[in-house]
Length: 430
Image (tube, rainbow, N blue to C red; front, side, top):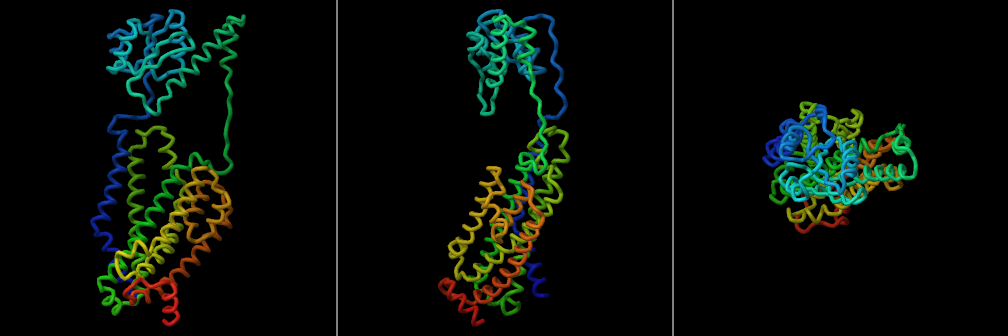
């Protein structure tokens, strides 16, 4: 036990002193800080937008003076229609549809409208050839620009209203028909996948990166000590099992500390700037994680890390040269990547209770990600959770014992990388 404690402290200290480990952690913390403080730096907040100023005149021109006045409040939207009647009708419809714009009439022509949009005096402009035909002008078209969709809906209502009036329906009755509102409520009796998706995706990706990264680091460290012959000196003063368990647990603690530092800083920075993020649904859903889900994440992270780190350590002990590590760990890495792909496809499709995910929830090599995803995105019977954790615990103990035996034999094998059959024979003789 004393040997194990000494190795654990030594390996953990090496991680904490490693410049790459510290640098990567600080880099992610700095990126998260920049993102979380961004609304504060840009002056954004969830304060209500100032009410739109009322105008006494029915028609307002888009002169330079008018645009200068509008620049202090909402962005300007210019309208250039073919007839005064269409201008008045479209302006009223767009004022109701685009509440985040100041809808202004353009009276100086198409060239002035284009110049105003290009210079930034106006955010966008519409030129109408009729109520059902227009050209939309914007300087830089964003991939998230849905202005034309809103305009089409507003113009469709306007054309329908006009057609009803021409058919003899009174404007009041036509307006009531078009303004019929459909109301509905949605009550989820289980998990809301739309709300849970983002933090589940982040957690699964974090588990994938940490387990794969630190597992390969265990294999690399073991192979480095063996190739440099330092293993021969270490094995004379410590038991191979103590060495392996010390390395694996130190890696697990280092990965856990890194996750706590990154996610802890994210939670801290978000709470410091919560009022500036307002009611952003994506950000709110990420930080609205139930506390019990964090507990499940911790359980599956530790158990999943152990089962892979033990195997990575055992494989690393059989490699005679550092160059052989990538080839040796490739089957195990591909197995882990396959589990990750199955989970991500199911998560993206929203079907997290399909047959593949159900089977993966009870396979030790895939359950850390699969069962955690099902817990976060679906309603899983408690007995299935306990069964999955129990199978994983038993598997970790079994894999740990087997890996310790392989480690004890592998550290003394030099030359070409031994085949599985040779390792089994050596284990029987040991």
